[in-house]
Amino acid sequence: MTDEQSFIHRLETRVLYGDTDSGGGVYNANYLRFFEMGRSALMRDWLVSYHSIERLGFYMPVTEAWLRYKAPARYDDLIVIETSIAEVGHHICTFAYKITRAEDGLDRPRLLCKGYTVHVATSMDGKLANLPQELINKLAEIINPLPPTRRFGAEK
Image (tube, rainbow, N blue to C red):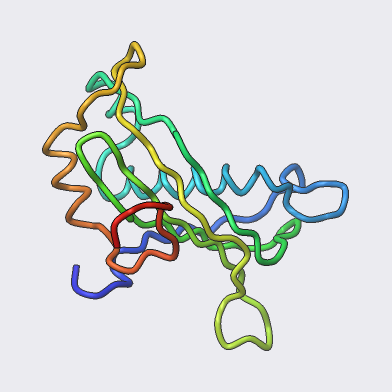
């Protein structure tokens, strides 16, 4: 991968009616579902599926999440979920996200939400575990040098 754009996985999806609240905008917690969609697609397309990770004997649960809402997505909007790796270590992997929507009259997509999720490796019985070195190496190859957000306290 040569430029910063090549470290960003993009997934297009439409907002479902069931994603919205009574005000017509996407319900706030559903942005975490969109983050999961982007994260799962990045892992499946570029590395390995979560199902395969579980077959290796560990989970990667979310231990921290941060979101900043900028503008609402609405029913039937075509949104783009941009996902990248912001940080990786022996036990930890941080994913960064940006959700956008194209709009007429704007020269670039409107930012709807950005954020990150932190995941730690655990054994099947819930104890902290090391990520396999092969997976760490693969994740490290695709770290975005300029993620849209960084974990609070993470090294720059």
